[in-house]
Length: 188
Image (tube, rainbow, N blue to C red):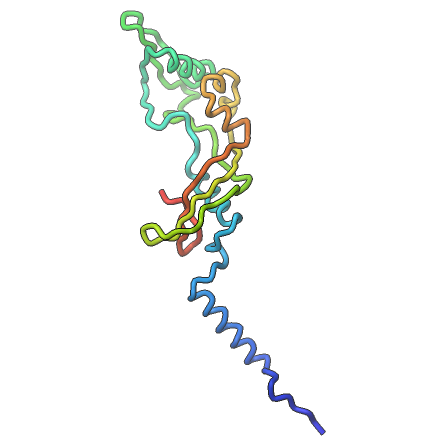
């Protein structure tokens, strides 16, 4: 005598059921994969952003640059000492004039000193819908990567203390992230 259980499902029927449940979960907006609000996904998004957005000394500097300001002169003189700029002094108007040296052309005019790499996600705000996108603000800790030799100079670091802090320690910052079809991103 053969016993047949009427409640057992065939493997094919089970596979169909799993496929349907998976599709329902995806369509209903279940947080899976790159779209999930996880520290790993936030880290991936911030690191991808900063590969293309390096940290720089100047946002809108144009050369030749002239100044009579003592603080600006100290900063620019540190770049002269690092062989990135050349300096002339106009005594009649009491200003120093800075031009880019041959070695400095690689870094001018912004003098970027590396990119951020996330070491930890410290926290994030609850997700809210802004302009049709789910967004969160993430607080993260980072270190600087691919720092050029000139940025490690004592004179340059003394003249640019914010850069020195970013290079020599783990720094905390915030970033707003938006959830897109391809995962979390830092909006430009």
